[in-house]
Image 1 (cartoon, rainbow, N blue to C red):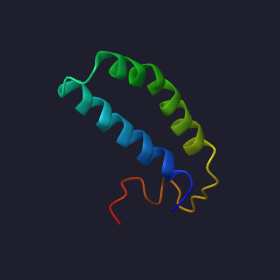
Image 2 (image 1 turned 60 degrees about the vertical axis):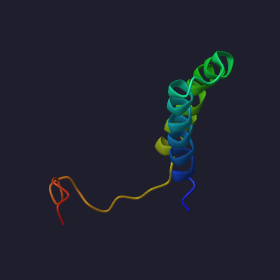
Image 3 (image 1 turned 135 degrees about the vertical axis):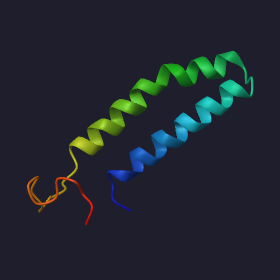
Image 4 (image 1 turned 60 degrees about the horizontal axis):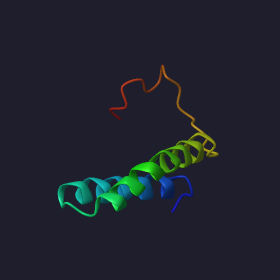
Length: 68
């Protein structure tokens, strides 16, 4: 797996677990802890995606609509 996709999958899973915990009436302390560390997960994900070494060969004029 590409190393920049792991944070995306982990942060998405964290979000799904967080929303499920809210609707399942899990302990408020756990939900508040998850809420407090969620910005760190999002910042980590954004940093890994933005610093990924991905080379794009297509230009905007060639594939501006991404239908191919």
